Length: 303
Image (cartoon, rainbow, N blue to C red):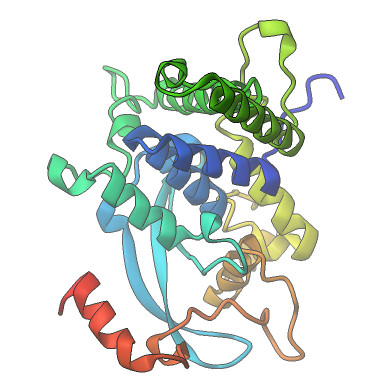
């Protein structure tokens, strides 16, 4: 439909995260966590840009299906459009580590080395562009994300075109050069099919997605599996003017947990209340080579 706003699909998000990891720089690491945060919180890029490191905490909640007390991340989010502050529970993804909030959080902290920059902001580059001189929300934060998306899209196109370092040809024999070029062409063809990239006759490529596409994708997922009243709070919507029900209905922690699980691929409703799954693993979940587990954890995290 002409004028239709693009929605980020699961395939879109996986492609962005994959190519961003290939790039391996700080900006790309931030993009991965921006994508995951915006999806998990059903947030706009401008809201996500203002996130502080202290907004993320580990909290206990009671799983509605199993009645277990579990520990999960919770992130606070200030939504500028509705002028409200929210706290949302976040759960591990069902089967893809690229979409996992804690993975992308650890990845951006390590690759972008935020801790050494003496900043309280989780996305310092975006946060620096968030407000104008009158302290009003500026569109530059969204533009910054759009430019990162365009850069990733261009990177995909380069891969499809089988671009490779020409210096390789000076270091290897011609026969090996032919083999490498053939390999790049095969990889490029596979990526072209997977990423749905068209070469566009050498013109500049731009992403079909913009910064708000990730909130739209989150809303699309929630609307497929949950009733509207369960996820209005997750999306930061002010619904009291739509129907008097929303003047009286209060979103519970359990409903927010169901929204968080749904966004991470857990969709099966239990016989009792709540969605099945989404319980984070613990050290007790490891059943093999347990004698190696504790030394590994100590080596990685100390304590």
